[in-house]
Length: 301
Image (cartoon, rainbow, N blue to C red; front, side, top):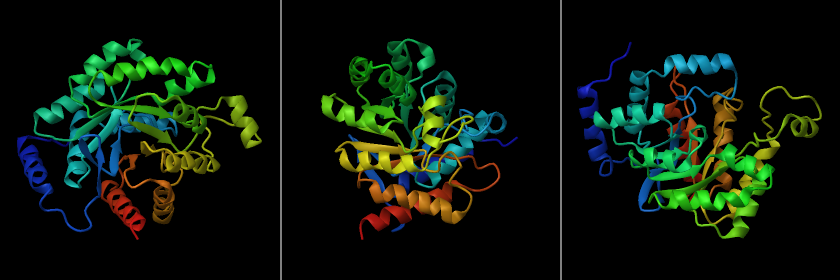
């Protein structure tokens, strides 16, 4: 098993301390996020939480791979590549790992997703805040269930509770129309977590849209432009996720580059992408940094 000790963390601390003065011209771009600065590539937490959106077999493989030691090594690799922010669930597994990583010198910032299994938002927020997140967002699937049951206005109180933590307040969703509705309400929040695939359709709706029976989650490429239209139009920061369709756009290096470029053609200069990575078989951190840096540079030309 790989180990990750004090010497590794001291090296990481040295890298972090000199990063702002030693960036190369092709370094990963940074953007503002309230009073904070985040990398335009944020590392996503789904693989660490063994959520592949592909199959139970891949879920199990991710769970076996991301031991605490592997997860800390992975976060170190991200920080060494200039990725300074991690988005992940606000559950005890993630919080314990993040706490241990920071105790050993890690400096990565955290954007937390509320964990609906708590059943008590206030309690969940209190535990999340012990790790000093820079942002907390309302779980997208829960947002979508409120929308589907005509109860989305209940979200206002949840957003107020997140605001009281002092972190940047986010609203997650997989449904473009949720963004349309939220834009009309004047709710007090700072950013969207926008999924470019609508994974909240029920089986009947998915079959109707697909024109066939659908097994499992339905990833429809035509959905991407619908959400990216909202990303373009809103004045709020958007953290854009499922860029690769949970591996469905990862067949080749060209397909990965095309998926990133598609998103950055719509993204505003202050938006960022959230990408989960599973580097068991191949290097992914540096490749994604290169692709995001390349696509971000095209926005300025």
